[in-house]
Length: 145
Image 1: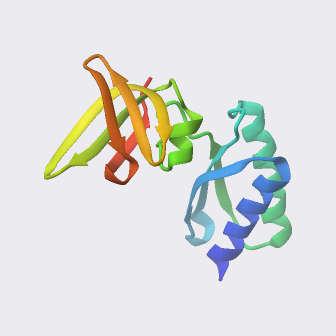
Image 2: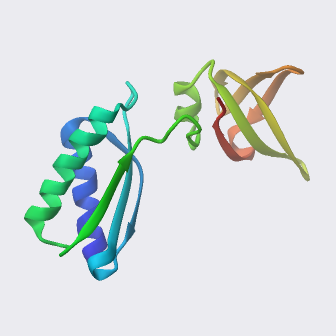
């Protein structure tokens, strides 16, 4: 399947250069196909990283001749990146975040710094004090600069 072949090229190109694929989207429409990829690394992403990845992926796409014409957009997850896993929270200790979570039948939103991550519990420090949030209760979270 075409999308699976493109996804494999996206992931292999990232792995070869030492990047992680944060997320990608494909819109396959003949001569108007679009490929958007957000790459990440533990050291962050610079413009030169996006350029290197774009060059590598473009070459692989052209060599495979999967698409006759396409546009390619490469970027980083950005300053307001989503926090999607417990590991994301642990990676960004002491960073500011916005977290939307459920408590019983109520939905709450807090902004503060990620202080600790332990046993699936996220400790946030806000201007109102400490808040412990079970990761399983988080609906959505992102860094909040």
